[in-house]
Length: 335
Image 1 (tube, rainbow, N blue to C red):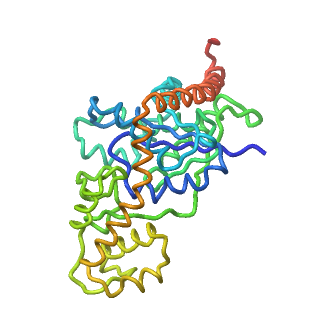
Image 2: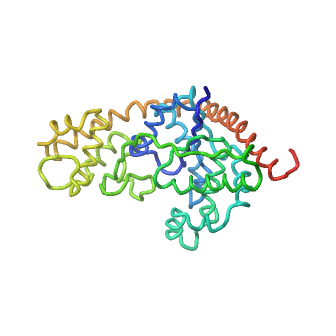
Image 3: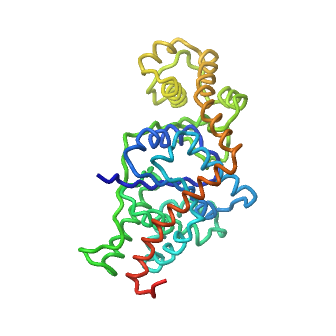
């Protein structure tokens, strides 16, 4: 029986952090044998907001190497770079021409980011969801893991499938495949270590708000020591008045692989001066094998380049088949 295909992408902006790992990547690793996985570094999306061209390539390598270091296996997954597959841009343009402008103008993420950018907001940011739709549809993905911030974009992708197939195909022979959201058992929701009411995020302007997967032991220690806490004696879970306490205890529980009861019995009488060194050591030991594998991969540049080259070859074959079907349906001359 053929495995269902999963498509997921990460932008090469900022560093992957514990929230990314515990909330998503670790789940991908644990279930990857069940699916035919395409993991993409979406570097075309990275330039929809102001970016540093001197670091884009290096950041792209970093994300690809971290995929591997975290446990993504090439036996079950294809890792590739979006910009190396020209079909992404070509299909995005074709889809642009059937996408009503008002569909894009109502996108919540565009509205939020446009406010921040003011007059400098780009057409690319407005058009981001169409490129995302192209990413998904090129690989005929059955399933797309989506977080809360991407649900609306997947809904637009599904709307475009209906619109395209209604205009240029038949119900018996649809051209574009309808993707569905992949709702896995909810991964850990890790919050900022400077504000326990906000999710840990790559886009937070303060690097002190997150523990990055490549932070050194010394930096991890500094960040946790500076992490926001409260003056209350004793530590416990699920207190809405103590979001930072709940977040740091949750982080320790997950990384130490202990139950809530075990953590409560161990930590309920501790002060922050006792607990923080315990959390620091646990984080460092969790990240040590990931960092070791990452630096080993980065030391073999040819190895990483070959993986991305092979990934691009496989991805191009699949993507171009879909693009050809779309162009045929639209009436273009055959290539």
